[in-house]
Length: 102
Image (cartoon, rainbow, N blue to C red; front, side, top):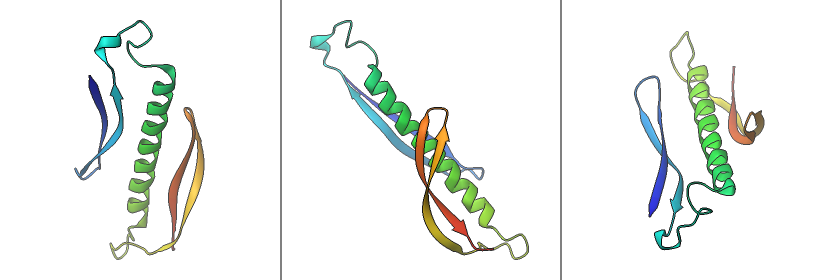
């Protein structure tokens, strides 16, 4: 048996992006009390990937909205692209966080 775990993100203007978070496989011939449901390592890995995708998508959406110049309604240029480390409730997440030019 196989499960595909997908995350769908919708922007404020209706665009949707789907990310594959993980795949779980179970052989029903070897079904035991230890193989039913998620294992701890699988759950941690899925949660880490889910958190990474959610945080990065939020950062990406914020940057696009913050880059819009209110005077000219055009995107401001980016200064550079860096990686930031964020501490979240579910662990540390490294995200791409560009800096915009003022």
